[in-house]
Length: 142
Image (cartoon, rainbow, N blue to C red):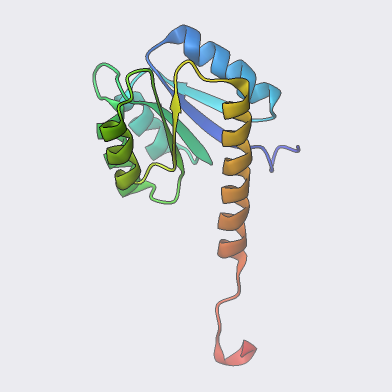
């Protein structure tokens, strides 16, 4: 995968060990990875950079994942967000999906879940690229 095709993923979790392991797995899959330790840092990075996907823990200090998700949906509505939690209840899952998250990964995650997530993010990136390069109908090209 060349530099232009690499998925740019933001991992947001307060666990340094989880971020490290997830970064290693994503980089092995050819992704370019940034990290944030809480929702506040994630929001700052989303305002400064473009991402093809965000993996966002629900329970974090300072600003939690649900609050960060709400803000991210406002400023970057097309960026797919995957929620991550070890404390995920069906109610939280449904709430996050209604807020615009595309998926939910329960900790501890499996390698297959990460591969599935990356493949889904690749498909969504391709669809966004196709959409942005589509020719708008004008009098000259109808």
